[in-house]
Image (tube, rainbow, N blue to C red):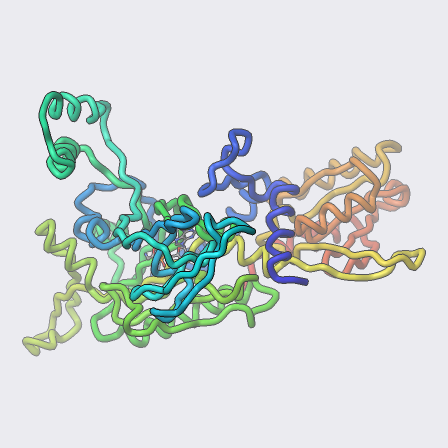
Length: 505
Ligand code: GAP
């Protein structure tokens, strides 16, 4: 299969079956945002639950946090996001595409390029030369580009009921002001009400370090985990939900003793790779890539990306960064609050005395929830060629999702809508629902069509109620991955579904 065809098939399946819809579709859609439909929300919640389980429930050294999306604006000044969370924005002067200079196709400065006027398919050919910045327009290949402007990726908004524009217009009315002067007035008016939507969940875990540590008496090493929405005004949104402006993250800040970051970074990279391997069918499509020194963020002394082999090539799925003591030190200095930890048993390396107060170092596994959902759907998508009973070629599509994250764990299907079969099937569905298992009762269409539909949405089992069920309380269980069918008592079928829905240890 052509790799980009795969992406087209995934986007189509996601819409057709109710996993992911374009936001505000009936209004023409919003390019940078997506809505998770009835099956998408289940899959997303199940992946989030799997992460939470591995990070919080299965260990006693990590606790959770659910912080607000809007935080004090000084948080983002201190963290470096106000001054540094910027991308180089460039306009193509030929086709008008707006893109990130650092992500554009690289070309040696001085190379001659040919592109079509206006970025059209056909028309006048223009010759150009790649300038000293060494890239061309990613859409039309033109070298006619604007200067780079730094564009801050945070969404700004105003907190409070007063529209600052009214005051702004009152201030500038009748005055002959330069653009810079007007900007200054606007910044001054909004400086006390301007807030940001968080671009990462991480900062709240630094800002609440003391509250969490003191209320739980956690001892270093320990971690704080958080999941939730983050917002970035991305210049380029791409590859469906891979890069969007509103997305979800699953981040954990693990606070450690200074000097132990090497061993903990190794521990967390291995831990995270093992987590993906539990849910993936093709673990070879997940790899670790260490950042080059010049790639490291200003706060980091080492970092690995967990990368996935997407249809367009290897790309980031999660970052596992050694963040040093940068954030706690910065927030401590900005607020005057000592964000430190006292270990009464450790010897202070400076004084040589027992009892050491230090600012913990941090290892941060930072995953994208919505990006993991895309990677796991890609990993699960399977097309199988075969022949039907009449010898005709047919292909079967199924999502080989791990049963613990599959949106629907079992479909309960009466063969016909009569003879007591619907009542029997409803009773099986009720038993499974009462056990906390999400199932679907489905009596529409032929049995073959129902199987095909449930294959495509990744339902691991179809339980069919037929005339024999009415006589001996047995059902047919069809296994998604093999299409094999087995006859068994209802009680055993229920147990198969319950056991398989457990998360892998
Ligand atoms: N606190 C560190 C941090 O936020 P990051 O590498 O910028 O690090 C972590 O983000 C993860 O969040 C990424 O590996 C990716 O999975 C996800 N992510 C980041 N930006 C995203 C976007 N615009 N759309 C979807 N997911 C995104």
